[in-house]
Image (cartoon, rainbow, N blue to C red; front, side):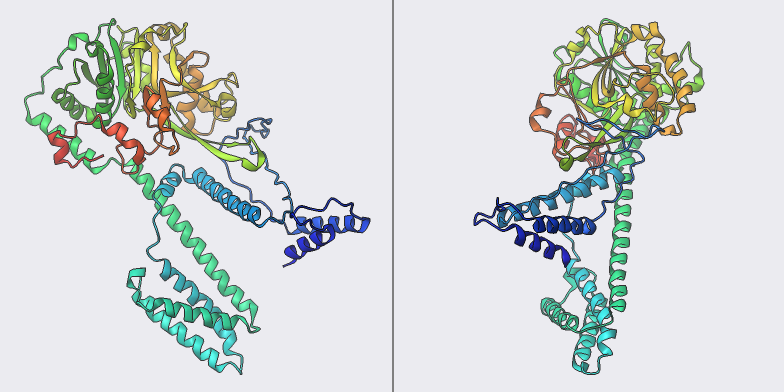
Length: 581
């Protein structure tokens, strides 16, 4: 109550023009003292901003100096709010209030994203109207009425109000015992709602025991917060389950392919055009995948846009569990004149590495990295990037394909929209890995994950998805040995085992990355709802990095058709398994 009074006193001493601006006349010494007193009161009543827990968040400040703790853990620069200018323009005040509400909503969404990741994007996109809004409102009214009833019942002159309050409480209890959603409520619910509101308003006009009411109302707040947190955690868990679990249709497809493989006579059947597998003069693409449909889309989209599909050779590396399904699928389907080879990574024979290295195949590893960007203090916001890097299986490429000089590695969550043959003519200047660089993430910001290794802090992170690999240069430098050696050093210098692939991959290719032009690949279609349509059309490769893959129900709907158009939806097995991505 004091804050509005403080503002009114300040405005009274300063005066107004008819236009609503502050007066230009000189203030007296007493007015100056009053202004100082007002400022002190405002500072005393100003809320304390909460600290945000950001144990896995990397701070990036644009236009300001980065500050870190002595331990190397990044910290967020505090945002100092500017005191608001006093204006008397009602329209401007209304606009400021709307802007403030939008900013609060953005901040709340950013905090949610920091905690739950891509789930918060998905929740905002699929937000539905509450089916029990009126029921919850009735419960709140019942709680408030119960809070006031004991105090009103003690007033000797308010028997009528006590009886009326008790009658309304009993009526609402009866309705709520029969209703769980708004559709269950009786038709006269609006009248009963208004009646209860009127009774509560009357009860509020009497002096009552505030302690009892305060306790009851705090119970409402505590229960609501607990319920909200419970449902938030539950929905986030179910979202993560949907992200990490293979959809029923894809599982059915994989099982049907395995059964069909052993029922048919293709056990000893070889892939056509197998003589091309070791020809270094052709264009060789490598795809690591355990998802039949995802690998099929990558190959189909690449072959469709190739000027000369007869020069394409695809090597699909998978594990023993999915090998037979993959093999039958690519024996049943052809992709123009391209050759396809399916390899079980567990059966690959290497001359230089022990069999124990290939116990299991690993796919590219993704990391969610968040940044507190501060371009303008009032407009600070959280930026999230999904960085994908090679897994340990990728570092066996030079020895799996001993006769090849250059390969292009494609993740199984990409879609090709242009001919990629120009990648084979790139002059990489003794670099090993042609990749899309992500300069919003620099090695200096990841030093807490990189251990005590020596590295250039300004080096940009690179992304897997579309990678041109010079195998000859790789063998010269023996980067595979470097990778395993760095892995041992990093594992000693960091507490996080999850950062193993990120740190070792970035350090292994330090100063050996050839930056591809931005038109070659566009990332973010698996987590970013705000990608420009024109940028999508111009990109040669679309990378669905993030948790919302296009073959999942939680995939971003407006991007799914870029992936679905390269599916053979008329395949009999897809129809029988009800695969409808």
